[in-house]
Image 1 (cartoon, rainbow, N blue to C red):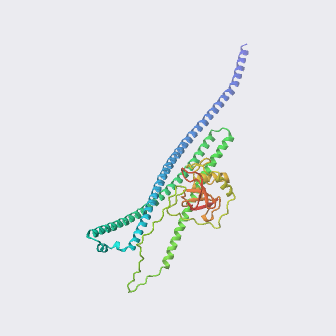
Image 2: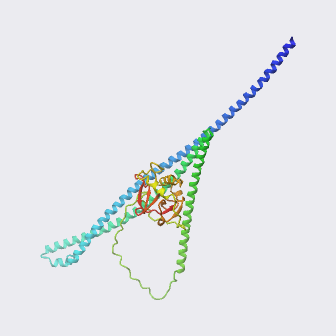
Image 3: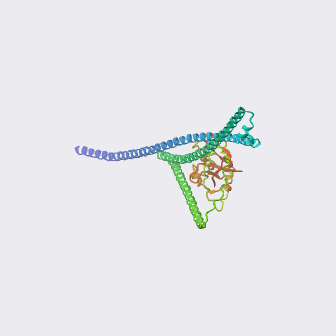
Length: 437
């Protein structure tokens, strides 16, 4: 009996041991899976926290760029007001000078007709009495004094016109420099926005568990990074081309100087005194040049010194087949407001407008601001322009405005704050060069 009981207990014990071993193994496996999942979650949270920190830094940079851009636009407005005031003052002075010139000429004719009026001795001799002589002499003296004052005023006003012209040109130059810096800020903004897009897409890809959507996010991230790299490459190419052109121009200038030195005849010395050539009378006052109203930024601002024209390519590039579609798309947005940094479709700035039109009409990414857009095609002169070509203002590598040529000496562009997308004539504000797309 005891043996039977012991046998039964032994069998039961073996059965319990056999059942417990799988349960223990299963529990260990679940714990490992939980630990592994916890580690994945922790890693993902760390990555998300790091990406969020990076994103916050990018957003802070974007806000800073926008603040600087706002300050620059405010400065542009002030400069435009100052330029407008100076131009009005110049116009008023020139009107006064013109009227005074007419008065001076009339008095000169009067003196020629009645020469006795300028002869004090004749006035005294022809006087009826001493008092009459005194009266005539006083009157003549006053007339001479008035003429002298008028001439002095004329001189002062002409000097004022020249001074205001110089000051106006200085303000125009400062305005253009501000426009260049503002467009560079646009480039920084585009770069940071692409970095932000790549970061957000990366976070979304890490958080997305469905593989198909994760692949889409990864694709968006790769595209944003590729666009950013392409823009940087285009900027570097434009800067390199500008440097090469400057070096070529310097080399050409040095060559001209060397040729001039070689062809200059040696001085001939002799014992005779050199006769002095008669000088030309330069006392005749020159007529002041008419100052045209100074153009506004991105629409009518002209550089004080024209930018050097880039070398024309040989042979000239052929027109892009999509030019008709580009022009048609550009016309669709006539009247939409200018907003700095806007990329459409409801509002634009200059480079945002050209970028949007080419993306929609031709399926091309040409860059988000003017400098990379310079490298989107072949550079051409203004005489070669055809519909669909881009037109740029400013020196290569530091352009500050862009539009789309539509033919007939006209282009479409987004001008400046307070204005809207419009068609303008090259004769009103001429670009510096074109790019065949």
